[in-house]
Image 1 (cartoon, rainbow, N blue to C red):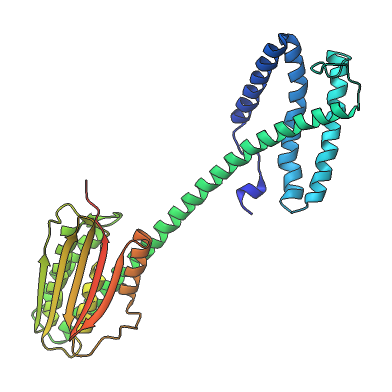
Image 2 (cartoon, helix red, strand yellow):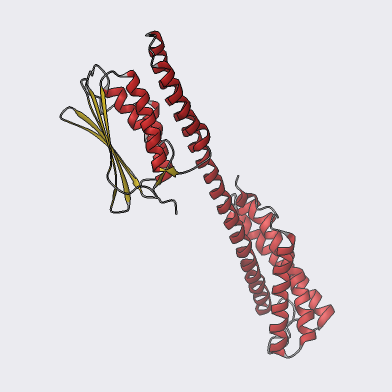
Length: 350
């Protein structure tokens, strides 16, 4: 059950006091000026507000939760009519004994209790106050509930995004450690270089991008280049070309957003491929979109219908969370090349 359904008395007490105090003062001045009789207006409004306030809160915290929220509208109507009749009796009696025997001095003639016009006038007045005060309260409650839901969605977004980021990092290091293990089995003298480069990559992941939503694209490119150097130690014949076609110094991107695409190129392009060729193109399109394209040749054709590994799947989920539908991630094969193209909105540091 949400906050609106509970209808708790959770708006600060001073706000209730300010509302009723302001409303009372406005009515007192208005009718005092209208009849040129401020003492009468004060006494009359004092009686009316002593009845308005209990009726409003009785409706909000008893009748609405008990009947309206349970869709018992006939019972609610009956209970409200009984409440209004009770208010009528109290107002008429208090006016008669405290103010004047003329129970409706505002009218053009003298009225007696239980005359239909007087009953209707009192009930309409109470319904007016009831509707206005309830609308104010329910509107404030709705606004607060909307803000609470927005905060919850934002926290859920951060938690989910953090979860995906935490998945990507172990996944990458797991693959790299596998590469290192393969080299160690060969007693390769490349192992020390791999360890040093892996240490640099871990420093970037653990310290440079920790807790940051966006990082400079230049740093991400450096990170990718370090990763490529590690992979080059594992593959005997690999040629990697990186083309930066535009000014990207001020561009920032989500951390580790491209690495899964690079990993994918080595993973699928390196299968039985003695001459792996990878080309990375990065450019800005119309100062609005960043275009990141990676191509790799292959011997065994990749399955375009496969879901891919955890890294690529998580990248898609992260893109969806960060950019909603305002991004494009496409892949295709052309001749003997597998091509992935990612386009995301430009975001600058300034």
